[in-house]
Length: 206
Image (cartoon, rainbow, N blue to C red; front, side, top):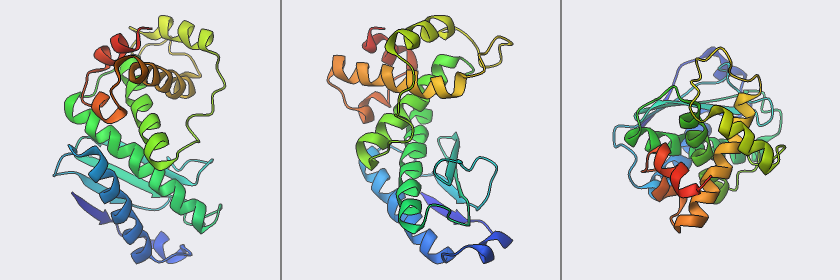
């Protein structure tokens, strides 16, 4: 695993040094790596301030491109302060590294259920191991999630009928399915991350 702090003029505007952020990224990534165990040794994590997918809620963002590449980004003004920045940075790294593990065994698909399971695993992993909360505050009832699942189980994310709220519901439905799979199978979220999305849905019995 290698971490790259990409060059950017935005580092000069950051209230925390680049070296401190690099230290924290390394610390949290090694912590997640130790828990997940089977993440690729060739994983690359690139870090750059102010990429477009910074979360307005946490001031941090991340994307997983495949099992060997993650980016981490953040609002360099640190609007929530240093301690919350460190907390949300850790959560984002745990979340994205779980994606990297799942992606190692499950190449990217366009089915919405794939993305629901991907995000559900990441959400449950960062909740259980990093104390994450911002993806798990439910706004949908179980009956609403069952309806969404029935409508979208075989739908592609490229479908013209993708609902406008599919991103938020993807996280919620995914976490709900993963939690049910854990309860029914007795396997933890790390073990489930080695399975296919169809196997996880089957274990969830939804």
